Amino acid sequence: MTAEPVPVADLWEWQFRGLCRTTNPETFFHPEGERGPSRRWRDQRAVAICEACPVIRECREHALRVREPYGVWGGMTEEEREQYYAAEARRPSA
Image (spheres, rainbow, N blue to C red):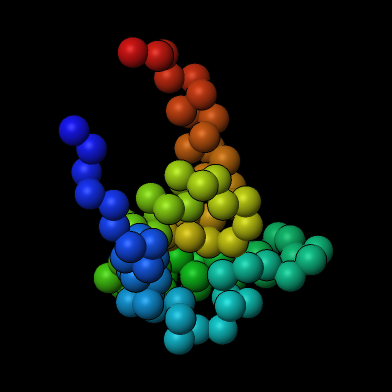
């Protein structure tokens, strides 16, 4: 038996509750060429916002599921998501 389909808008409704909606997007996405301390500091600010966000779990699940390549999503930086994907690839199949 299959589940009843849900309206597509219901799948994305969580985004309306994200704290990022009231924050400059540049906080979550690095400008071209940003490196070193500037990038780490910006990422830390973004992650701090995510940690207080009521939809951090939904956001992180979305980012990992669709393999978001850029920005801080669900409290995870691009590098942290890449580390997660690499760890998942090394995990033995069940």
